[in-house]
Picture 1 (cartoon, rainbow, N blue to C red):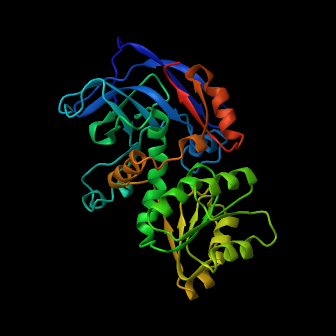
Picture 2: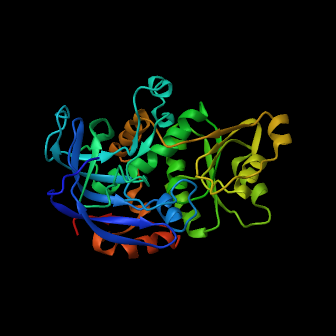
Picture 3: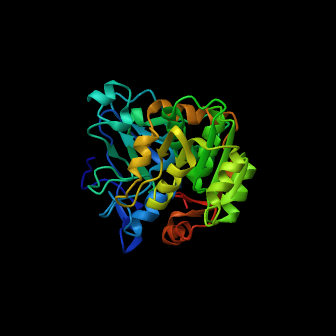
Length: 351
């Protein structure tokens, strides 16, 4: 992404892992052919960001300009990007695929061999939406329907991850599903699994408040992960072992729990980002023919499916979003997000 020395400036957040989050003044990005300049309206703080700030993300170990969950308004279109017009509200699909490798040609753009990320890029080629403006390729922007508000549109990116996981899990019609972790991705996994036809969904977490929220959203039950009999309680609530487990924690302990909960020939979906390498009970995995399936973000089809759920009113925004602050309060916003409260913190870069 190129800029010129005389370009106008803007405010933007910068995450400095293990140190802090600061506001800096930088140039408004120039628009290259095929790209669109977007004025940010609403941006979510993701667990990816708080983990990176704490030095616990396996891939984000340098300074980066955050904001991969972003909604804004088209400000300028580059040559060849005239499918969008100025003033159109759009949401960002932040994973940028090359469109040419074998996986892209097989419609698996999330597994692109040359994948880069807007808002998760230590090279700082792509700056995220936690700034007054950001640039993205035309193909990475989705028009937002008029009936979907900004906060819900931001959550579409979050929902696309469990929508993708549910899709690659296979047919979930009538399935017994366990979801480990009741943060934003976990509760949206409940939404995605039920939308895909799951018969019963049970959620575990260390926070009773988060479990209550998951039940309000549609889970059949919530089980405290710290309970000595947590496994038995999950199986009882599911009326048997899980057909599919969404591990939205992806720590070694949760991976072991997932294997204990799933039935023979069942599927464990690793949805969360593991902070480090972990062991698995491989004799059980082999003997029970358990499928351990990594789940990396989403494709264009998954974002479109998540957007359709949002347009139908299927995203429980009021249950998820806890507060919205201005860009000038970004450091406090990250602190609130890292405090592991039940709600998601949003940043409005216009403030």
